[in-house]
Image (cartoon, rainbow, N blue to C red):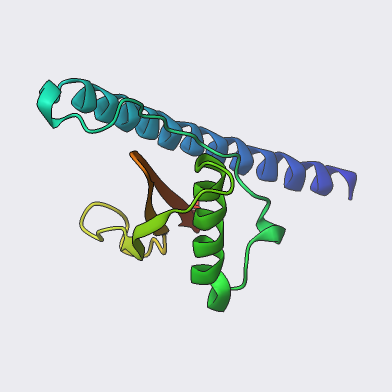
Length: 148
């Protein structure tokens, strides 16, 4: 019995290591995209630059047990976007929401396994107060790919 338990633990640890490696690769892709966007921003002609500061913040992932049920996912993304935007806006000041909307993207079956249920869900919000613009995009990746 002890040998079977060790085999199960070893198998589980191997799958966890594979998923951690995959997540690390995804994080590297996102970091590369962040660097590319920063470079594009800095290469804009000076007269096209309407902002003087560009910041990207990545918040830590939430534990699975704290995620909303599927029917409440859009409202949860909206609340998180609003909360993040409010943290960046001056306290007590008036602001205008210029854009607020939900987005989703499933992986293309031609570029991934057709059985992959992976999906990105997002809420985008653009607020303005005076000359300050704040943009927030809250992302959620649904389903980790099976590594075994």
